[in-house]
Length: 239
Image (cartoon, rainbow, N blue to C red):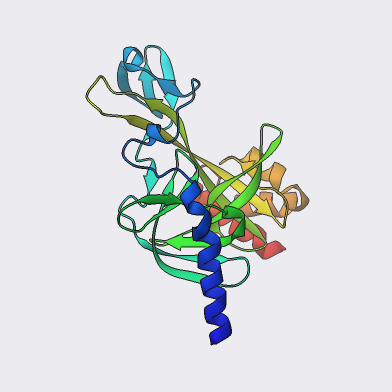
């Protein structure tokens, strides 16, 4: 019991001691994390109309759906599982999509988890997240993903802010959120997978015949996230 208690205390210190060096995030996230020129629209560009699949400004369709940049904005209690096997419970957590950052609060300040590479998984409000390397535009990056399907191959969901639209002096900020799906095989970086038959057959090429037969027998065309979840679960049954 004493050994386990020491492990938990050490884990808490590992996560919390560096936090004082991180900026405290208060109010508008722009104060802590500046928007980039690529995804920031100013007030003069804010002629926004509802469109199918996103918003439009002028003749340009903006990718993404308007949403909250904080997943878990009401600070649900969560569990942090560390790679050394210890667990930290009953911490109030949220995911900052804009910063790709897990945060927690002590009721006064908002602090970022300083060493995400030490986290095995993190769960709150019925959702589980991991910090994972992934391939993007020929580069290997790291970020937080929600785990949708577990097994030898894991289906992961990556949320990101595609556009930050400034208000017209009214203090209102609009954020467009995109959701992309990735597949993690073994210890390799996660790779992007689309909700399409072509993408599925490319990713699961070693079981192409079985996958094509599965699609024919079930009538699933891999057009929705639910189709993708079912396909990954079937693929895992083949391994």
